Image (cartoon, rainbow, N blue to C red; front, top):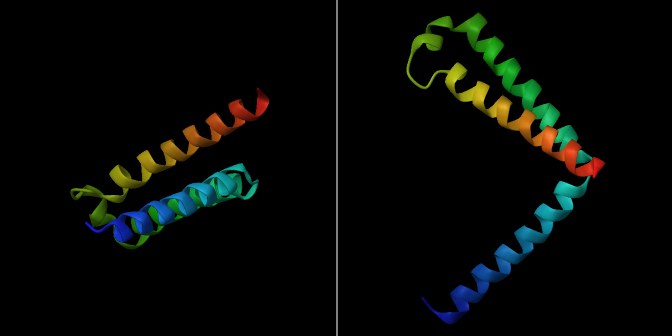
Length: 85
């Protein structure tokens, strides 16, 4: 790899890191987590109503949405604990 290519990758990563810190510190991050949870629950309900046969197949919405909802709840819990200390 050329040195210019490596520098461009490092520059992009540094910008993404700074943006992620700003985004994580904002109140919008909690809102984003809640919207993520509600959207995943909504998608699960829509699949259950419109195409229930998908719920018994491999990689169904239950096995993909429920763990993501759990991770979002864990993230919200972690954010709450870090803001209290």
